Amino acid sequence: MIKITHLSKRYGKNQVLKDISLEIKDGEIVALIGSSGAGKSTLIRCLNYLEQAESGEIIFDELKIDLSKVSKKEIFELRQKSTMVFQNFNLFKNKTVLENVMEGLVVNKILSPEEAKEKSLALLADVGMQGKADSYPSQLSGGQQQRVGIARALALDPKVILFDEPTSALDPELVGEVLSVIKKISHEGRTMIIVTHEMDFASDVADRVIFLDKGEIAEEGGAKELLSQPKEERTKKFLARYLGSSDYVI
Image 1 (spheres, rainbow, N blue to C red):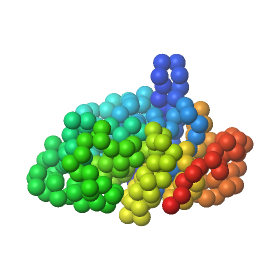
Image 2: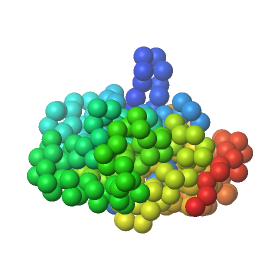
Image 3: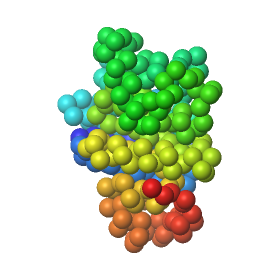
Image 4: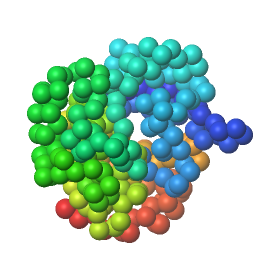
């Protein structure tokens, strides 16, 4: 379980997150939605400590962190429990697809090189990239690169996977192939937090949707219920712009 209490974050005078409190259960899939600048990406980056919040507390299973005074040991422990799939893939350009997936397993001495290779090849097969193991990121489409990024995240077998708008950098015709992979792994019982503008996908895959507006949780609820019958006026206005605009098909 992840429990966040009173998390706040600012950039200079700009208050990006305002007193965020929420709980995420083991195995739950949560979609974060909201307009650009609402604080969605900042929130999940704070959960992985890629961004430092000014205040608040995170409880992650037995790990309890006061964000006003975080030690290097706590940051390491937090990152052992979660991994990020980035908007812009963040693959190592000088490494092959296979080496990108193996990297964390070998560097952190989780597996021997032989075991890491075997596991990485199996994960590449799971995301439909088994034929590209020896290719470099520059030789792949955006959708293929993102599927490698997902395989890399899965390799570390994290407690939670954080998806930071995984399709926002893709051409429209490539969005479906990445979302289909995410949908496939959503059936594995993993805890997932997904920042997305794909409302049809959120309705289909997520257990719960959280709508952020101006750094605050404006509304949250069951995915299908909130997206079809939002209660708050802010949510209704947002969804009027986004619902029905997705080309998501599986």
